[in-house]
Length: 389
Length: 92
Image (cartoon, rainbow over all chains, first blue to last red; front, side, top):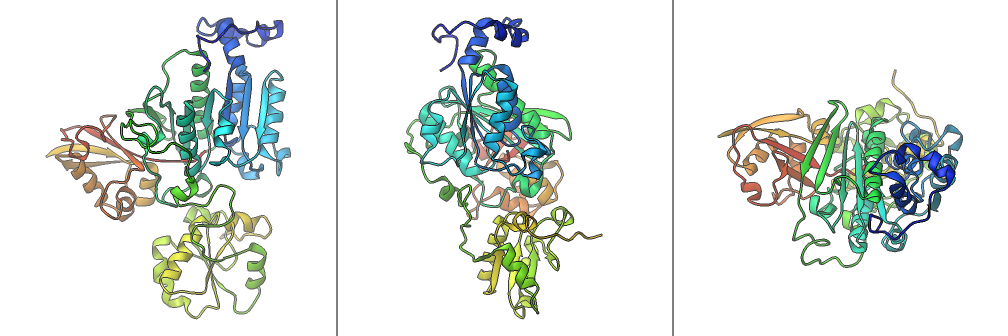
């Protein structure tokens, strides 16, 4: 672990004295602290809204080794908040571009690119060399995977999450306090909590929460201040208000409790009831239809009935031509009219919600239901959307 | 009965049509949460499992302290107590 008890570290170079002069003026940092930062290694899980600002400030601060786990590519919709990337990066692997940006900011930082999904198979090996893990991922299976791996390895898990206008941040550290499972022993039901891609997020919000994560990481590496352990920080951007909630270690926690039953990593997507990150399949097994195939079917007479099960705000941004907006609660009421349709295609933003709704329709006896693979995001990559005037 | 406030997580407010903070009369935590759930089927689904147990994907805090230890849902409430319900969120 990095901290005051670390062995003597190499001296700072003259250039490092200039680069970090504002740090060196701080008694809580000083030369020794700056050497600790340089000796520190941080793994960022996710180079997205939270990971981007955190990575920039950690590199600027002089953290010696930064690992980036992200297998995604830069999309235009990322640029509203993921400040590591530029318009010229569109379509490029995020981890590669992020590494380029961090090296440009601070050539002394060693950046390790892990352009692969984090899974039970690789998590322990990926996390092991790093002293701090920053979880800026975007799904529950990865959240629980990172937590359990950190508990098993004895590493701090610096946690942040964002949704619309509100954010959460805390540090899970089983050696000093509670872990993620102590706070949330089980994940919410699949689809109960919309993702940022579905529910939206204010672009500046992950910037603020990401810097809370960077701050906690720097404090940890320096061994200064009061860590955000056992304290859940809530941030409400609309009210511009922070709230701090205290929570305790759960002695019955299955991974960090007194008698742990989870002693190795499990199948987290299965446990959360969702597809594995990066997987194309959905857990319902409802047949899907690809955007190109749907486009061809829409030109037939009669075309399939298209049900859009997103929120009205998502619909307003653009929808498939000829679609009907139906709230999820009202889908069942549509069943009597669907029997005459040649086929029914349900879609949402990404294909997660539509798979569930298609399954519900099948359970209600509508057998000719498909859902659009990849949702509107996949459709819009190849075909135009319609907007209501 | 004690008059208490219950602050709700954003997804419950936006999808369940409830305000940020709800005022209820209740003697204990379980009653306070049930009174909130009775205002919205969406919130009820988000708060309770089908077997009626409180979901463990939410945190419940009374006066900014985790209420799941100690007396748990039997926690006695007093006038002016503030309850905060936090829903797990994974967006990054």
